[in-house]
Image 1 (spheres, one colour):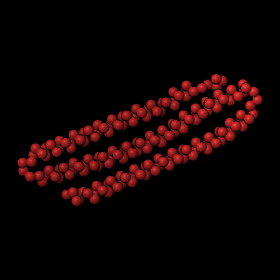
Image 2: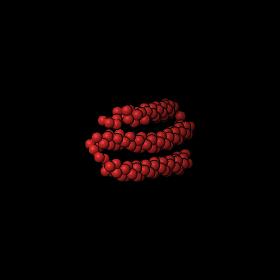
Image 3: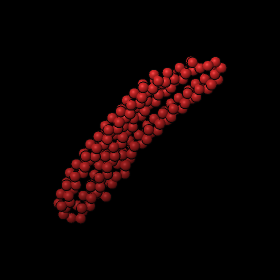
Image 4: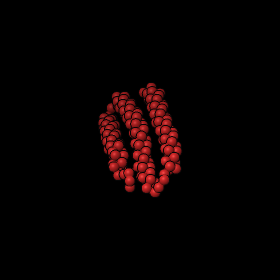
Length: 177
């Protein structure tokens, strides 16, 4: 019975590992692309800032330019952070989905093994079989609860991170300060 299910379990685990690797690589590619875009933008902005600074003629213009550059820097940092979070949240959601699918398949296989094993159990082992089934059911309930709790924590954290740029932008330096 185990010999029949072992290759299938290994195949499922390998498929799941490959899907996790693919998701991780795709997320890494998105982050690298985001970093390259941010680097290009920073170089371009620094060149523009240097040009603007070279054209300044008095202290008042310097102060105005400083405030403008500070506000622009905060906006860029918030935008970049938001984009990084978006990539990370997508990766987390995809990996959580893969984890849940793998866990569900594993649980189903475990239940099937328990059912097949208990079907051929010797007489008088009813208490042991009931205890085993109860343990499997309790473990499945705990895993389901933990999965739901983890999803709720991720949702709350995501909501907080999504609103943070707006709150920070409201506190950013205003022009002329």
